[in-house]
Image 1 (cartoon, rainbow, N blue to C red):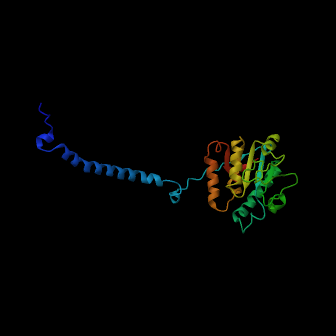
Image 2 (cartoon, rainbow, N blue to C red; image 1 turned 60 degrees about the vertical axis):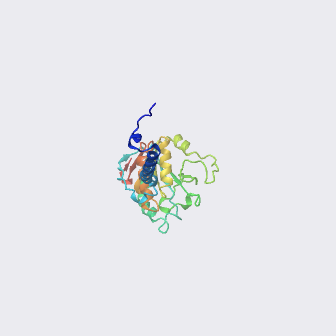
Image 3 (cartoon, rainbow, N blue to C red; image 1 turned 30 degrees about the vertical axis):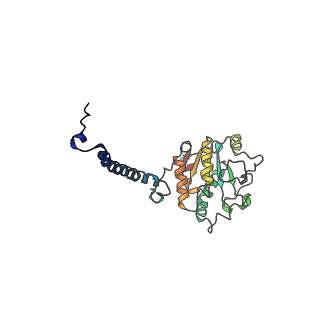
Length: 244
């Protein structure tokens, strides 16, 4: 029986030669595919926030709103205004907020708003708070508990006996919290967000918060205005836009 008349039999080209001719082309196509895949994948592997840090565009500023609060159900948290850090040498931006915070504090007291102060571990009593904002007799001092003022622990996670900020608020019918403070990315951010996640209405006057530079202030405002389950409870405002 005559074998099939395949093209290479007719042309005089045998199968071994055809296989030999195809191998270089196959290898070349494979190399091209690998190179193309590498070219496509390479930019993706570099697309992380550190590599693109300088390309970040500043988002538009959040809206500041006028608010009216009920003094009977509102508490004002004045956080971290102590003399050894809120001074012109260490934190001039903190010093710049003191006149407005004093105005807020004076008006809140006049309307019967509950006032609480917080102090850092290095200055654990109200005696270290700047003179313009010093506590009045009867105003509570939150013990040094780090950036989240709801935490019942010191910085080494030892529990403060009898301290429960959430219970204090609930016992006094507090449903709205106003937060002002220095080191905005710590106390203001974490306490405001924690309060929001616990269901409180939170008012954050941006002229009552400060950082060591502009960036933490901007980031904190953006975070509070854009984070789900936080932004629904938070109102960004200015001290002059708060009414009673």
